[in-house]
Image (tube, rainbow, N blue to C red):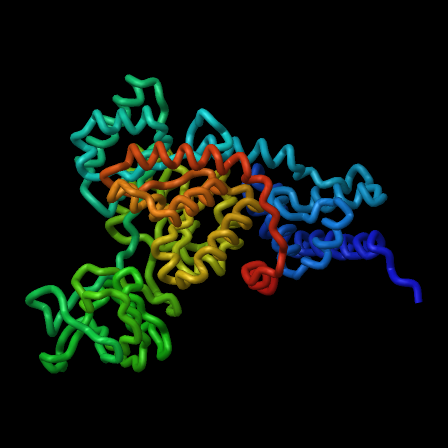
Length: 490
């Protein structure tokens, strides 16, 4: 029996893949027609890419690679065009009307222009923009702001969870003065605070604001201490409608994941939590520490009353608005509509991916974002790592980068970038490696610290080196769960 030649196997496999791509786009024509006219190529390419990533093509990739052909890796932004280029090399001819218009050259230009609009002009277009988080003290430190500009700050981040309009105005005024005097430009990014689920000790330990716990111990989540013995530990999660969303077996993380628990029982307005792990030497729960519920579908709006009150100031003064706790596409339309009602000046939205739900619904969130001409994504690695598990963070942040590349959406890499260097003046080996990986994003966010200038100098050196190797990384494509979830929904 004659075996099928590698070229014929490749032709047959690519034919099936391209037909599937076209079929999935046709099935979603209504969804795709709702995006902004400038986003239609990006929307179709996203569906093409997810169609490819809904299957395991590693054997096909190896055959392509063995014949010296493109293995479809590093082609996220123009995946069908790349597939057609392979077909051309092995003898297939396309009619002019069937040739994919979303080519590598077009996508590269489009992506650079989008990043430039969001994050401003850079000296080196292949090195990510740098976003610097402003501290309260910046409001009275013009010299530092000027120094940050001269050292490469492209975006100034103001976190609306802290300070007030008077402080924000002082920061913005000094930044604009520094831009005028240095001739440098800098975008203003303002973060909406979003809902903050925090610990509030309301029974044992209430006087000190902290309480000792141990592994195996049972504690309570409740909104008041009525009916509890004085020796029982009762924590209020500060946001209403949390407890009713919990179910037995759901995980609970306190204080950036330092304390792990599992829900054992849920009543109407209270739930028991069994402490299963404590990773801190000080086995304490303190007030105002974050609580994460990664398995629970919480009925909380991503926009608080405080956020809505901040919107007029943000719209008037910011170029970019950061949107926390996004879980579903409807959350994106909620903010977009509020901004449209608030002010004629519309800052571009940066959607923060920081929950398991936002990861699962990423394709739909991107397609909802595409109803506007431009927007960005932030990989908010702090809360996201706690929610999905630290061991999955490396995998998930790569997947987000791939999918956003397919959607032609610029990405901000955020949280703990050179954090030890910023706080102590000495970088760890692992965070140097992490900073190198950040070169895959279009912008990198630096948190507050005492060594910000040194961080920027180190980061710029790392990024300039890493960007020279960025296109040389080769990936193999197993199936992605995100793609499977999206394609099964229709």
